[in-house]
Amino acid sequence: MRSVDAEAELMARLSTFGASAEGPSYSDVERTWQTLRAFADEPVDDLDARDSSADTWLAQHGPYGGGTFVLDMTREFRFVDEEGRYSHSAVLSCGLYFAPFLALKGLEAADLSSAGLSLDDFFRQALELPGFKRVRDHQPAPNGLRVFYTDV
Image (cartoon, rainbow, N blue to C red; front, side, top):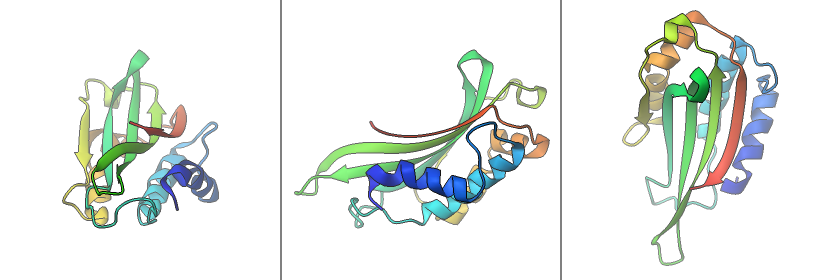
């Protein structure tokens, strides 16, 4: 897979796994994390395989404008030029948006990078971050699911 195809590939996988971007239910939350974990093993052909920071993940959660709470997993791509020097970065972000509810009230933003972790350890630890854990414990339906790819 090429990095520019990552958004379409992830959307296709989410659909195949049954996750819905339109009117998602709580089961779509779990399907999304399972899909992202499987997708993390997909190699990206236009990255320098020798660069351990060329393909990393970031899990984050926190309040977002208007009181919305977001759980987000972002795949970060780092590109180099022909001489092997840093060129630019891009991200593929997958966010689940929730209306505020009591269990999330006052919860601070948090994040976790995959740097130095195996993918299994990263995903296990990400799902234990306070926001991810509270959503799993209380199982609310998200208001939306958004996937996007952009250069940064």
